[in-house]
Amino acid sequence: MTGRTVIRGGLVITASDEIHADVLIEDGRIAALAATGTPAAEAFTAERSIDATGKYVIPGGVDAHTHMELPFGGTFASDTFETGTRAAAWGGTTTIVDFAVQSVGHSLREGLDTWHAKAEGNCAIDYGFHMIVSDVNQETLKEMDLLVEEGVTSFKQFMAYPGVFYSDDGQILRAMQRSAENGGLIMMHAENGIAIDVLVEQALARGETDPRYHGEVRKALLEAEATHRAIKLAQVAGAPLYVVHVSAMEAVAELARARDEGLPVFGETCPQYLFLSTDNLAEPDFEGSKYVCSTPLRPKEHQAKLWQGLRTNDLQVVSTDHCPFCFVGQKELGRGDFSKIPNGLPGVENRMDLLHQAVVDRHISRRRWIEIACATPARMFGMYPKKGTITPGADADVVIYDPHAEQVVSAETHHMNVDYSAYEGKRLTGRVETVLSRGEPVITEREYTGHAGHGVYTPRSTCQYLN
Image (cartoon, rainbow, N blue to C red; front, side, top):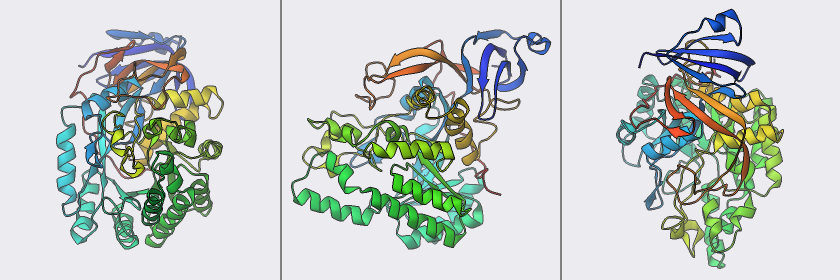
């Protein structure tokens, strides 16, 4: 649609500014901003007007870490690209970057084509892809160059999951050397998977089978060790590094030290590590399985260090690692053996609201909320200022956010295709009211007005924090 929309009277919040302004949208993009009540704003005319008085007008969230339809442990993540992107929109997220998977023995191209086929025509919001590299060889390394040229500019490797996604230090070094040349960014799952497997085997032999042991064997020290090793390998390769789902204070310390040395090292954490803990993993009657993810939830004292890392910019991004598995029939695969519980939590719908609650609770400022949830992920993965901000020329991915509305998080009312909520019963202040994706209303005053196929694939440039 080529129509014009004006959003009047809201407080526009970006990573850098807060201003009471009217926003003019034309042809799917931000056309102009003008201070509310000024002649320039009064001159805005449009077919559609949205009253945002008393509300925030914020950029749509950018969730740079999701796993729709991911095959894992003999099953699949329960959200499709259709259900997952619809739920994302309900939560104020207008762009996801998901992970295409290379299977061992297959090419990157095959994996990427498979994920394009899953997503195309099914998404309610825009999407991009990272590439999971499971099999580093000469052909793979050549393909990395081609993918960077066509807008898949980040590659994920795993120091965990031997026999599935695992790469050894030599494979990691080769991929890092290649990314140092082609401008790509290596994203690392930093846990010592070889050592963890020994601890898993020993725990099961002792009869320690409950979900809580998942957290006990995946030790914080083994996250810190792998984080340190990844940083040193990146340093040897002369490559940048992005460490995903940082959960342990010891790992934050490794990132902080590297950044203090001036290394191009970045870190992401997720809402589950900021709001949940090993107390959840220990819930009785196998309920703890709902909270099994890797890296695992940590004891509560780690939370303060993660919030501190977000305030000091030792951690730059909050993504969800959204990878939902139903309690019934999926999480239950691990009854009697925690190592068989599919790893992952639902969260794509909750991130923006949970982080607004962090503003209410004074962990972060309003602008930092937008920075870690919208602007920085867009810059980190080569989509700024098309995504992640409200400025003339940007895509009109805009959320009208009611900072005073109260809600109780529940599986009864969420839109993710999963039978439980990781935040069941949590009271939050703040709620998404209306969501525009490229100027089109996807959520209109708490009604879904979007459709599958509106969302388009978004090629990305390289990381915008590197020269």
